[in-house]
Amino acid sequence: MPEYTVLTVVAVFAVVVAELVYFKSGIFATAQYWWSIVIIFAFQVLVDGWLTKLSAPIVIYSTDEFLGLRAPWDIPIEDFGFGFAMVTLAILLWRRWLDRRPSVEEGDGG
Amino acid sequence: MGHLDHFQYLLLMAGCLLITLPLEFVLGARVYRRAVGLAFAVIPVVIIFSVWDIVGILRDHWSYSPRFTTGVKLIFGMPIEELVFFVVVPLCGLLTYEAVGQVLRRTRGRSRVGELGPHA
Image (cartoon, rainbow over all chains, first blue to last red; front, side, top):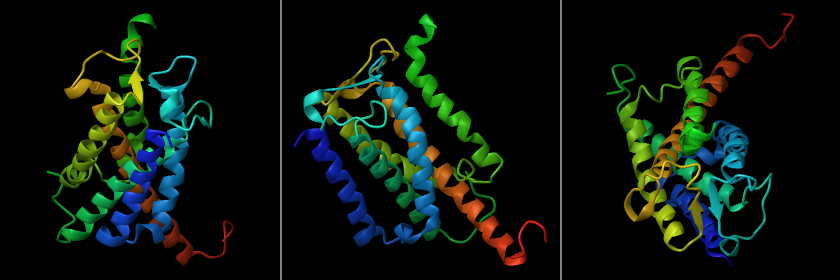
């Protein structure tokens, strides 16, 4: 399997395992998380579509290192695993911070 | 647009920040205003995904258009645009997550009050 494909599968798997055995935030059982993922993926298509468009690419992929499947437009499908892992990790850490700190809602932000 | 070409990647990232700004100030996501939590969430993501990015560069999984990037490189040839990406994208993700949370709380609150529909 191409290396980017392998790394993407590993990253998605690692984030899911991190939630199940370490974070245990329960986000995978919430509508808030899944609605967010749907919206984020929709915007990923626009931004990533621009970054990867073969007519004038900003990011150029070696054809040997991913499956070669590009959809929608010219986006390597691995990118969606990359995005899922990155955003999910950020949400897990954010939730960790929210759930761990004392319930002082005002005067924060500094 | 010729002279702006080198800033295309950065401008795209600026667009992401601009378009998500109402989530903070209209929908009340309160992500920017919890900067400590934001840093707690984003810094590990930046580190982990920068490592992945550098591995990808060194192993020739991907490269970056010299035409559409500034040419400013960080360690191991990682373009500064990628660092910006690893901050902006999780940030936009958190803004989305918190905004969705706000919307769900409001709609649930409303449906508790009025189950009778729009004409009630």
